[in-house]
Length: 337
Ligand code: TRP
Image 1: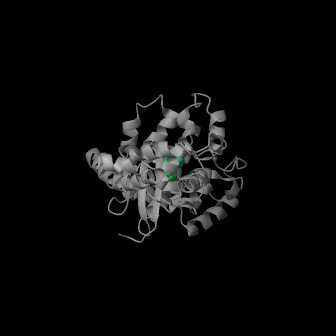
Image 2: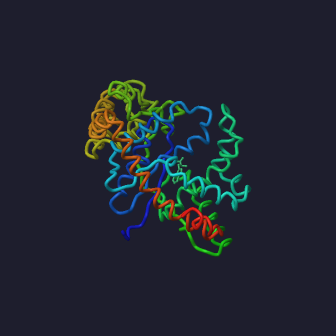
Image 3: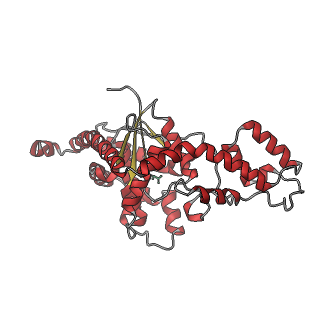
């Protein structure tokens, strides 16, 4: 047994991982592995909530996620790495929690309202999509997680999770779960190559799976200070997207020089981005090397996820049994053993 606090988080299997995902979520996950008992999973059922019609890439995307996790430094010797759909207890708890979750709570979740309006190319007026946060609540509480590292957009889901936990405890007069807390990290802000948020849907992302040639081209196309038209015009680094990348990937002393040479028009933007490219590659090199390694070993990646799922399942089964007992299904254990 360990007295470390437990951390849980999940990532949808929506496809290629980009640098924003690496810096925003994955590095944070990696950094928690020593201090906490970490459970990290591929939320493949959650992927279905918005991609139920298009499931051709489900298996490939899971494999790729596993490769990226291991390459970024998630360590199956430290953390439990697993797959949601291999732990069906999540679905049973989701059902039980759904019985005491008012529809009005779900309808006021901001991400639900926004996506319903914004996503026009598919029909999201589905039961599963409305219940997405209830499944997320089940994911979290079935491991009695104390902390959930997530982005700000997920905080309403955590608040809802706490409300569902309180309602369960009030209703069945027994404390089975833990009210989880969000854990925000100090993440460096990395925009997309055009300056908007880095996102698959904007076409402005640099992917870990890009070839080095593709990456270089993308880096050289990062938007710079629009007011700096000619090389002889002085620029403003604070208005330059490439400089936001420098801040994340280049050493401080180099950045001081970059600011000076940009403001005095001493260095052109193309040269500046060539320096940037060198630094980004230096940063990514160990990760890309590991990617090349794991990509050749899909069977091992699957085995790691399978073993993690078996471990997770033991914990999930135990909590589910406690929840069923609290509700009154005391006979299920007796009848099924
Ligand atoms: N909703 C999360 C996202 O889109 C993924 C997720 C599913 C999750 N279940 C979770 C995150 C449980 C944290 C905990 O990013």
